[in-house]
Amino acid sequence: MEKKDLDWASLGFGYVQTEQRYVSNFKDGKWDEGGLTTDANIVLNECAGVLQYAQTCFEGLKAYTTEDGRIVTFRPDLNADRMYTTAQRLEMPPFPKDKFVEAVKAVVKANAAYVPPYGSGATLYLRPYMFGTNPVIGVKPATEYQFRIFCTPVGPYFKGGAKPLTLCVSDFDRAAPHGTGNIKAGLNYAMSLHPIVEAHKAGYAENMYLDAATRTKVEETGGANFLFVTKDGKVVTPKSNSILPSITRRSLMIVAREYLGLEAEEREIFFDEVKDFAECGLCGTAAVISPVGKIVDHGKEICFPSGMDEMGPITKKLYDTLTGIQMGRLDPPEGWIVEI
Image (cartoon, rainbow, N blue to C red; front, side):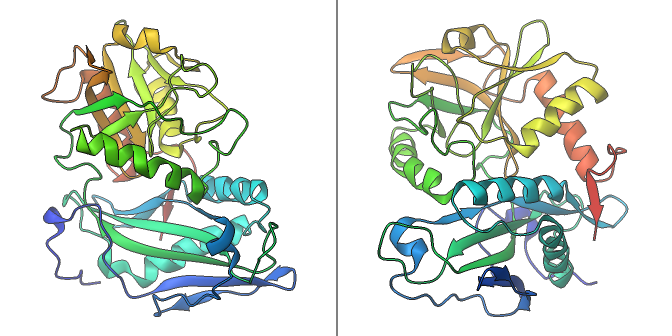
């Protein structure tokens, strides 16, 4: 299929409307058959549950053109699992996992001309999401919902690509210990908007959030998990019941152990330890891994030995290996790559 005439290399992480998206509706206790539509607009009642009580959740995954020209997605079954869990926590009817994966395939196939070519540095980002649609004025779950998936070609999440970022330790809390930090609810991201605007005004790329209970442990940023490398080459990542279980982070830990032969551990990470790490990165679907060169804690700088010019050596190996799997340059673990 002939690709769209886009300047792929110049794409940022923004919305480009594509031709088809998937829609399914939940009514009278069941999901309908669902299908593709060319209509990108949504019409809602003024009292819709999503507008009154933020009953909405979403996912994010990508499609790629591999080195040999195939179009693939990366571990969509884990996105289906996570959205299922998120919906249960928000008292929303979970969208069937098998239908989720089939809908992803249908959207990518229908918009194949928008999947950036191999080597362009761009990818096709998919956004599955669900929200309450019927009028709800009392505080209670909606009874009708819509599930949709749209896609858009995107470039790097952070401007400058792999150039190391500078973060600041936030005075705000991202999530409560027994709240919704471990699910992909829209309200979590609404909570992070003011802190990220303030961070950008101060010249920082992102916030580092500490745990709300003790403010002594590293949690995550507003949109990515942390990954650290110790000075003896061990990969460690924060463990907490109030951070999102990133699919990229979980995949990187397997890559570290099984492809690179590194020791990798998920555990509580105290902020006091951060100054002793050799490398730091932010990992997630949008960014894969973005290196961090410096963290500023109320004027006190923590500078990683990997520096502000390029990724640290182990972070780069992790990045190259995972993207190599996603782009078809390396053999994947079973089930990781789904061909369209």
